[in-house]
Image 1 (spheres, protein in one colour):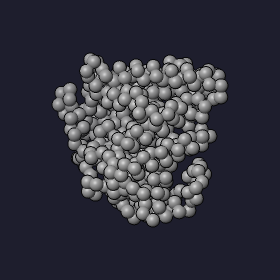
Image 2: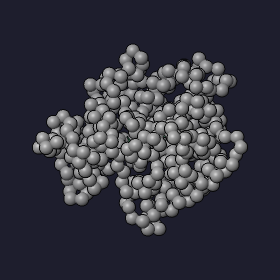
Image 3: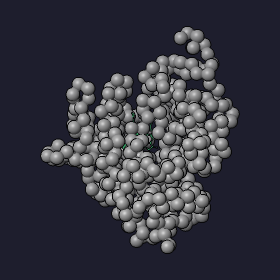
Image 4: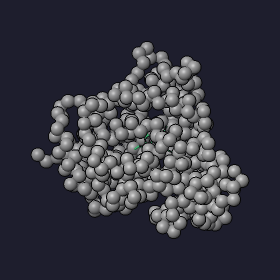
Length: 441
Ligand code: HEM
């Protein structure tokens, strides 16, 4: 340990007092690329009030994410912690986190997922028909309503939630997650705390109704109400409320970004669009989708994977160092934050050929570029905190993409290369303006 403390810190600058390099980090899209060019795959900076070490690449990701609870633990800004709630999986730590994760994962097992397919398909059809009627679409807010409806229906059994009060409270709640921690009625954080209380009240009503139903429902809440851990104990209503709130939040923001990127990248790459359409011709459109038929859409799977490599919905993850340790000859000191970077890892030339180009074939079984090294494909994180909803997300994306491509076409209204906004999740700045319609025969 004493020898670790004698090691040098990684290169880099801590920037201004208090602010550090936070403003540049938020404003400059090439913040990390520049520093990677100057310092390499490990550098120090100062972000969101804390000295931080940024790590890039498969080896560093593996070191970070396989040492959770030994050297590292999860860490969130105060606003996020208070809004998500102490009993939410993202905030829980150590043994409690592992135990809860096991319990919650019961809602994401293959059998549960198979029960979600019909509901996802029905909601998707409804939205596609609505968009066909609109024609000239500002798609991003519509995609957000769509993913929120799917999350509400399949996670808590509530219909068309995006038109209801829940949707509105959620907007306010999400806006406060990464805001300044000032709790006044007119600040983002204050409004978000109020929205949290309202949401918890609604969720409690829904839980109580669900408990009274004689037949257990097919949604995640129905499964979680039945779920028990090894000792046979169940989640309390108080904890369940925080967990459901987290699932609803995590279950739609990132997915909106991912499916919007799919729509964008396919409009930009007609050759890929044509190949996806050709693959769909192998299926009988009059038959409902099943987990088995979706599994056969192997090219679509590669396309979706490539979409999230090129534009990952989550740019990275923060951890806190709980014990000083060493990586590649540098000291990683206790009390500092560490940030792993999905974006930069996905541009590693030693893993991905021509990493800046959109090429789904890199994931076909012969090339399988990401399999060269574990922790080089990081869309869903890794280790004990890997995304709990990964299979749910992949399922929803595939259903959306297959049904969309079978019958519809769309073109970008504002030119081929719309500017992107990156915070909180990547999206085209014009909110994805498209001309949408049925495929011409
Ligand atoms: C394309 C969509 C999605 C992406 C890219 C994504 C990405 C991620 C990432 C990178 C993490 C790990 C963060 C870290 O290391 O700190 C994570 C965690 C998590 N995700 Fe997702 N996610 C998606 C969809 C979903 C969905 C649909 C759900 C639930 C229905 C969900 C629930 C969660 C939960 C509960 C965690 C926390 C896990 C834990 O701390 O043990 N996510 N997600």
